[in-house]
Amino acid sequence: MMLNLYVQQHQWIVATLLVGVALVLLFWLTYSALWLPREEATERPEVKDVTSFIRTLVGVVPLVLILLAMAGASFTIVTLVATSCKPPTW
Image (cartoon, rainbow, N blue to C red; front, side):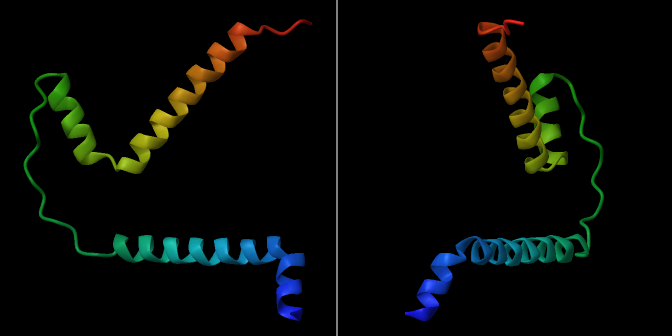
């Protein structure tokens, strides 16, 4: 009963420790993946139109960076539209 009470009273500490352990594992796995041997260099892809450019971009840039850029652009657009609908009354 005492452990249950302690965890319930200080659940933010437990959550912070769990998130910290998860982040350490994530960074450790990412760091170890960086030191794996790289693939042989391939020839440069030819970019002829928009679809081949997007295909090349997705093949070169990590998906996380593409998703972050898309999320930032969509947040900016949504914020601008929401702000323009209700302008400030200064």
